[in-house]
Image 1 (cartoon, rainbow, N blue to C red):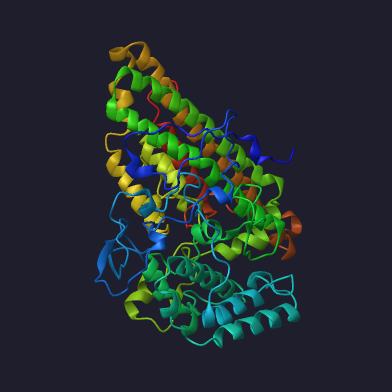
Image 2 (image 1 turned 135 degrees about the horizontal axis):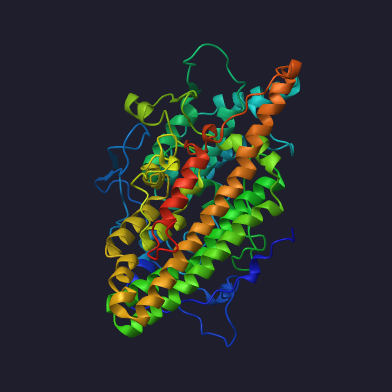
Length: 546
């Protein structure tokens, strides 16, 4: 397969007029050049002013300003249901795009490189411990793969360094959103190193919980409450807040970005994260096109409908580019290495596994956070935004087997929103409110029977966009099968052979597809198929609704 060249995708910003509340550009526009602007062509740093003083990241976080209550939209034992009281210094209830932390040029990615070091004692202790996990160029060994005394001793020595950390206060960084994000990233990486470097326990169920020492659990839970995020590794920690510029003199681009931290120190893990980052960057145009469609829907005349047709066709092309980027993960991420050396570090709690006990925090928090999911592609705000815009409904289970109780929980994607940065959650909620009479309803109201030629074009363009999203999900299923399902079956067969269970030609029992779970805790392939099928059912033309 030829190496993937991300710069092949051209980005031409869509026009905008009315709903600037959703996608307001915070930077002065740069005069257009005669040639098309590519995704990687941002203004020189000298042309870009400092962050606006009204941007929420420029404002002080004042922990003494009252409190507000955020209520989770999910329910069940995911640790995030019910009201969570938090101290809120910056009012993010307005409709400015800056309040949603969604940028016209970088989308859900930060406009500036995330900081790479915490200040003062927090950096001296937490950053040092994290660096020590990978300082010799090899890193720790996953507990399930420890085979030598040297590996066991190295893991134990590092885990002792975690236990020996003092309990530090987050007061020095409480007023800084970017420092809190870095702290969450650092402590959740330490958390997952700590949990998954343990030797596995054997014995009768239930096994005792993973015990997280107070020096780690207390500050992690405290800063997670400030950020209104769970105290566990998330997609934002792995991707959105885990990069820096390769060349600080050049702007952010898919070529000029590198990852800060990995668990395995492998090219495969770096490329896995970069794949998601590239999809996020390519999705910037999708966000702009969604906004433009909603602007034109506000007007609703024939000219506006024709513009929506054009925008929807362009949206289809953008989603297909995102699919190409997704499939390009195969270029430098080895499936076997991913499954055995990388993916296990991501795992949170899953059914039948040991719970996580955050020592030193109150009992209510211990119960909330005992069963948290690991990072998942389902935590990408970009894909949720596409679903909301196109009117894809994941809340109603279908009649086919992929929607059975073995498959995806119909509330799973709503649960995954609770693992997103709170400003992105607010963006999705605002998008739902602004898109209550979504584009699908507009297209259905202007059907070919009632609107003639423009209705035919409109329905074809809408269905084209929906099917592009379906193709993206088809590709996701193929990647999940290659990197997870197939590898799970290979590992099971190898383990069975090693334990002599194949003697006398005995058949080896391999895990069924339905038994392979994602890092988010779902039965992976049935859940992905359900999402794909829900997408296909959104199309309006009978030829597409399969």
